[in-house]
Image (cartoon, rainbow, N blue to C red; front, side, top):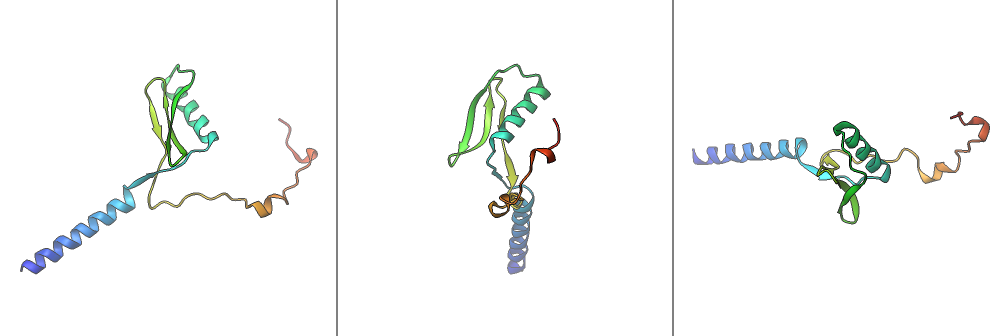
Length: 108
């Protein structure tokens, strides 16, 4: 009887932890400079923020993961632990074969 209760408790705990790990656990994701600028502009547009600059960068392991705005807003880029990290679609080996001439470029 006691062993059955212990096994049920163990399985419930394991199930709960697995669901949390797959659906809720997050880690910080590094931001590129383009992502940082776009996110800050989006924040300014959405909230009507009048700040003229970012107050500070939030870093972890010498990588930028977010920013603080002068208005007090704080942003941190997060992703689920179980989510795969996006990879670049172009490798360095293939980048030399992309020769685009002036005639092939679209006019601005």
